[in-house]
Length: 259
Image 1 (spheres, one colour):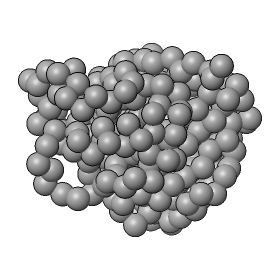
Image 2: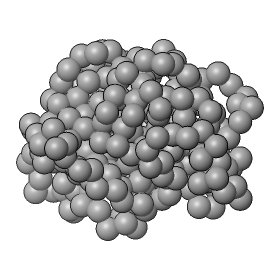
Image 3: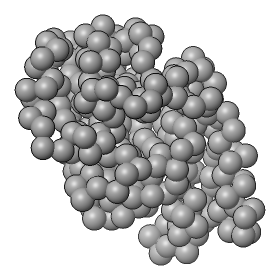
């Protein structure tokens, strides 16, 4: 697998960090993890093969994680690049995803589901195993953020593994869920003194990383509080036990299969 960061930021406008989105290449196809309003432009500007996206994962229904999806579907109806496409686009996420997209559709009869290609909406519950693309399995974990929020664990055909927490408050369960994965993509919205319980600050993220013991971890969903800080110095205070990488827009990371 290979991960490319489309947006390492939040809903807060930022000159260097777009809102959340991640491009994951697997043996069975390409998955976009979360689809903020910035994702369509990032796909174009980074030269990614957006007309051939195989699946989209929506972790929860905040606009900075799914607000770009309805406009994207509105645009693909007439995009020349997809007029000959026949393979389905699979859109996966928590219970309620279909109803929410239908509400966007009905707001102005946007015909979001009337595409040149089939659109499949797959709703999953916590700990429900499913095939997100061919030969690649996934399972969601309920997290303390919104009622529907799910982290996702993805296992490729070569047994390489990846976990994306999406937005979450603190819970030890994520450490178990992500145990020994090749890459853990974890939010760390705040450096310290977090303002809300439904996000993580650095000490909490590092606690989860130490418990999970992944090969590598990436901190993302970074609020402007991180601006100007020495990332490596801040992380080193917590002795994470593995390489911890600062998410930056455009960064690509290869996941290595387990030995």
